[in-house]
Each structure stands twice: as C-alpha cells, then as structure tokens.
Figure (cartoon, one colour):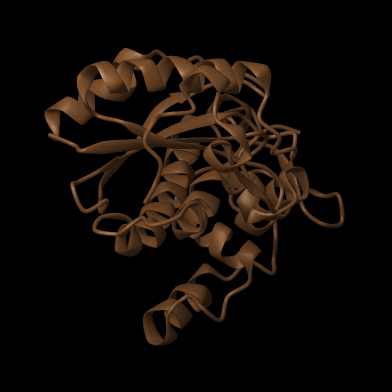
Amino acid sequence: MTLNNIENREGKPVPGGHEDPLWDGHRLRRHVQARGAEGLSDREVLAILLAAGGRRSPLLVADRLLARAGSVAGLAGMHPGVLARLPGLGPGLTARLLAALELGARAMCEGPREGLRVQRPEDLHALLRRNFQGLDRERFLALYLDTRHRVLAVETISIGTLNLSVVHPREVFKLAVALSAAAVIVAHNHPSGCATPSAEDLDLTARLDRCGRLLGIPLLDHLVAGAGCIVSIREEGWPADHSCAQAIP
C-alpha cells in the first residue's frame, strides 16, 4: 500500500486524500479553538499534529503510533530515525511531532526548574521524572547550582544507548565555569528500570568528584533514575576514596 494508492476501511483503494471517513479535522480544530485540547483523546491530539502532511488518515497514523510506542510517553522516547521510518510519517511530520513533544516537555519543566532550591535529593525527583519519562536510552543531565543551592540551569550532557552514556568531565564543568556555578549535581536514567548504580556509575562519580574539587565546584550528588525509583549515590555510598567530599546540606 503506497501513499498515492491507499485503501479505506473496506479495503477499497482511494487514489488520494485521507482514507478514514471518520476523520473530521475541522470539527477537532473547532473544538480546540473553542474549548482547548484538554477534552481530546491522545489519538485526536496526535491526529491534529499529523493532519498537516501526508495522505494517510491522521487518526489511522495516530493509532499505529500509539500501538507501536504504547503511550505518548513511549512515543517521546522513540529515536527520531525509528519514527521517520514508520508508515505515514517521514522527515517532515517526524520533525513536527518531535518539536511538539519537546515543547510540552519544556513547558512542564520550565516552572520549577530554574530557581528551585535543592536541600535534599527528593527536591529534584519530580524534575528528573519529567526529563527521563519514556526514554529508551540513557540521558545524562547536569544541574548547576548557585551559592544558595538554587538551580541555575539544567543541561543535557549526553544521550547514549540502552545501557551506556559516554560522559567527559570537561563537558560537565564547562558550563559550570561559564555560569559561575557554586556546585553541580548530575543525574542519568537506566532504561532497564533498575536504579542500582553500576560500577561504571561509581567510577564516573569519582572522576567528576575529583575534577569538581580541583575546580572548586563540588559535585554534590549523582542521582540514578529507574522505574519508579531514584537512587542517590551520595546516600547509598559515595566512592570510598572520596567520602570526605561535600554533601548536600
């Protein structure tokens, strides 16, 4: 089945246009204009985004995307290259979809992120859950704090594979110096769902701790996020030869 010769629900070919007779883009747009998008289902919101391009039914494409990803959160975690190869998408709609998902993620994180005062690891749990939700690859974040331990900025340092994220201390502390940050907290997710820090996590923590002390910008903690759980390496056990490093007060 090609984009130029698609079939409707009864299996009859349709030379062009959307094949789904239930698709009513004008009705959905009027609903959004009058009452906002809150009353729409996930598939309807997706369909509105996807209606701008292609000949396949936006609702059909939305159904297939949600079936493949399992949820909107799962969709946000899919690799752009995988999305672009799904039937009915392509580079243009993939870019539109990813931009919309990123905008939503930024809107959720924007309020409590900058200026948030960190006194204990739990203060960052909500922010980290939003950043790591639905990801199928490791993402490594650095959070830069001022002298009162308020968040100045949150930066993605690296995006890795299913079980690995390559991080160089230089990339973590470069922005810390530029921002005149007083301290740093780093965090990453384990897509496997297990939040137990690995040997590699502990080794990286020790390296970052050494660099931070040399620069006078201490590493306060390294948080590891799993399924429903976020572990503080500071609380679980800092690398033994750096137990004297500064903790979150």
